Length: 346
Image (cartoon, rainbow, N blue to C red):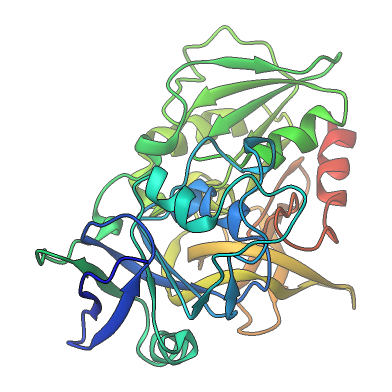
């Protein structure tokens, strides 16, 4: 453990002494918290966390090490920095290939141990999302990741094909998690993954349905994706949006989105299917939500914690989206039936 002076500084002027256990570098980002008890390898490699300084409220982090890349949700860590209350440097798990500290250093991700991450969670919940800095050595300025197009940095750069099947699904990659891809392939479809700014209108692709993936940042930065979805809706082919995809579908259809006070991040968000008494535990990771429901759509799910929208569905056409992650990883698998519903529409 390196003893170089380290701090976590918040936009409100708070400065907290800390101990570094990651890469030795100062970094700025938006402070976000997750309440998940497990799944830090999947969370750290989720592209939706791009630009975030992730605060984990659960105290024991690092105790089962880091698994092989087969269990990651992308090819690298996407959080800008990590903040934990207790770091365990002696992992015990048969899948572990290295310690969390070694992984963070290898991937050049700063990380801090602070005395009480629950205090930080309470501060964010009270004051709302705020910028933060991990300071290790020279100080730096605050930077707001929401002012740049984060999706363009995490999306694929070329068209890629996966799986085999009679049905073909176009997957618009806004920062897709690997388990979305796995979930589709497992259901015997051919998946064509395209970049976030792919021009569907000018394309010769033949497909049976579209999935719009999760991703980081403000959905209103993704004008090219919104235009592609607007075009796709005119074709009346099944369309499923996931997380950021829920917001992008709403915008493309004439709805609106807004920034949440502190976002939803964790594996225990309760969502009720509207019109029923069915409640599902869901995995979530987003800082924006759908406000105005577009014409022709109706609310599909709602968050039982704060009553925010968790999905929309068209009243007559096969267009629907969810704000949560039906593929989980990490988290409960209560809503994997969403994929089955989509496949049944193809």
